Image 1 (cartoon, rainbow, N blue to C red):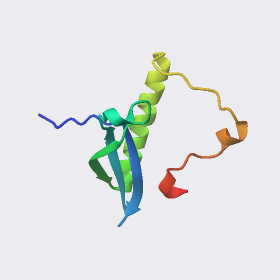
Image 2: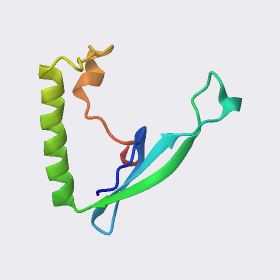
Image 3: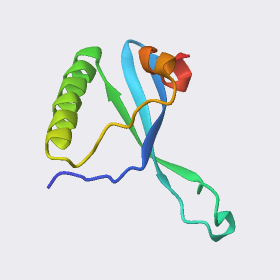
Image 4: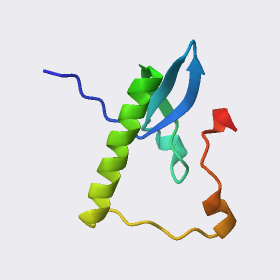
Length: 94
């Protein structure tokens, strides 16, 4: 049986030695952070070749279109039209 991991997000994306590395996290349960964003617990690192990353991106793009066509997600209009024209970059690439 394949391992399964639940994640809340991705951060710390980098290219090192020609490979893409992404750290995944889940939100920790901490009663002291009530009403605030909970602390993040890093639980997995994914390392991919550029070709594997590109294939993954294509798969995610197909999944996004399928979710839209089923009405499971909708695009939110941008607050600023200029921001819409800029490519989104991970914090480590800006």
